[in-house]
Image 1 (cartoon, rainbow, N blue to C red):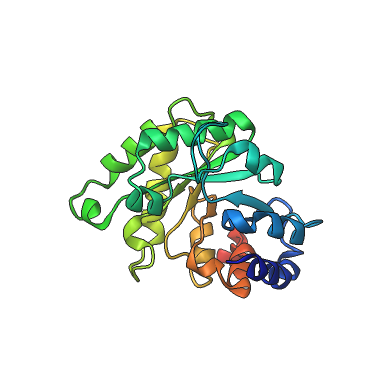
Image 2: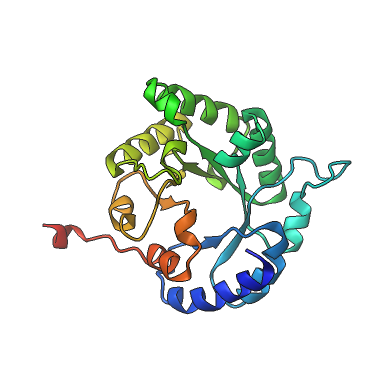
Length: 236
């Protein structure tokens, strides 16, 4: 979104999440150019901001990159690293992603580290091997208590294909075991929408969601942020 669009979005979105449970974190990740505008529009609310990436060096000749210090100055709290699109289109390696995550933590930011397999890899029964490699290499030297891992199966992003909630939960559980930190925050991302959010959030190993297309409409993302999980009594 442009700065003007981001400001308009915040105006429509904030009233709809004003009464969201206080133990629920809501984070928006605008383009770098809209961070300052959105931060101003969110003033006084509990909604936080993430960047869509971050460079691993604090300074230097890295034209076009954004450092953690620059993000901190704008009040950013989270950084997305290893998203499927930079991995695919810009050939980001697990080593580079690890550097970004470590730089984030060193600066006091919380990295949201994305992992996930392609359609071809899943078809070849390589899901667990691929994701375990991404986890082990991407999380080297990372403090899991100041980290979010997002499982986003690439084949379920904008393709119309859906990862069933049971399978999403299974993979998130594997990630938790591989990291070895029971309290690790794990998100699921991949065709998350108002129609499946309640089912996803009822699963044991899914702590949150990383939302793409469905977050672009304020009403849609507000419904996701205000997800409802049936209580055990109600379910019975």
